[in-house]
Image (cartoon, rainbow, N blue to C red; front, side):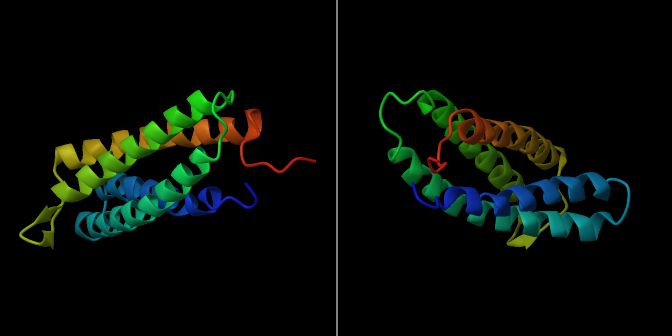
Length: 140
């Protein structure tokens, strides 16, 4: 696993989705139309880049030897990452009406908020894989 691509690629969906959830929260207070539009665009970018990160992560998961102590954590990490992707994609889907972006309804905001919580858990699990199990870390 020399220079795994997954850790480099995950920064994009993490940044986009986190900023989108923040924009949604801020939009409840000020500039709702502009911030909701920004949030929708960020979610879309996060979903596209999330697919790339998922493919890279899956390829690296296949390199993990069967029975490795990190195997269970890696599978839960992958499940949470895909769950987060689905939550944000659902939120984006609810923001599109007649091929136009519209202000999100309560369900779209809820999906985005839950997506952020699942994303945080996913990141924590990714940290466990690297720092506890040494996955993707070159030997010294």
